[in-house]
Length: 270
Image (cartoon, rainbow, N blue to C red; front, side, top):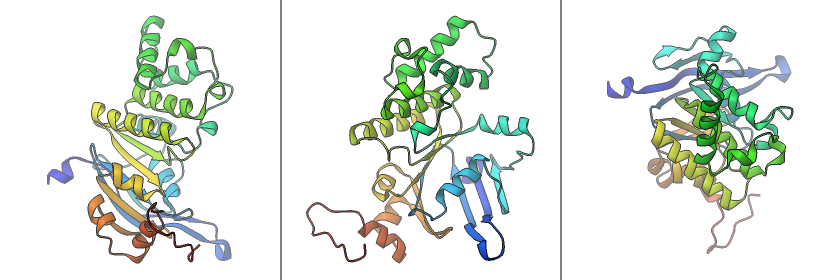
């Protein structure tokens, strides 16, 4: 009963099919899932496994072919533009490529002000809006005074990802979908981004769903792990259960594919 009470996002039989006839492709195949408040979940799979398609369905960017998605225990209704906007106040995303995540014609001020407006702050005094934007940038170790009137493309990749997290700080959603958020930045920035996301989870009680091919990352950050192969969840459980005691051959292969410094690399499967 307690698990049902703090359930924030779940789905039954969620399916996505693209095309018809000979071109028909089942990208996501009747998956069930249950994500809880403050939980960190990783959906792990190779490229083409269907994990990003599922993320887009969770965000409401594409429709499902079959199945139902539930938000806070109620069947999700995003049938109108207004209902989608309301849903997006509670679920947001950080995408893999920071360079394509922004409108290149919008300055950083506009990006952050849009978040304040979404949270009902349209009529706040200018001074209060600047204060909120300064606080959000400070959270991710950026200085708003140095960013104002600049465009996102004037920042480095790591700075752009941190700006994405500043957006999340302002929006304070209940759920964050993080689709390969560290795959295009250097190792130092990667650790910083992960630390910021975990801190944000602790501060606002957010649920984080990582979409990743990096099973090491999944083990490091996750409470629960879902392994996805060809559109289906083939294994799920706690991080320790799935990574340390895998049952499925596909899961074991993903683990064995991680290079180990002190062992000879087996390239026979490449």
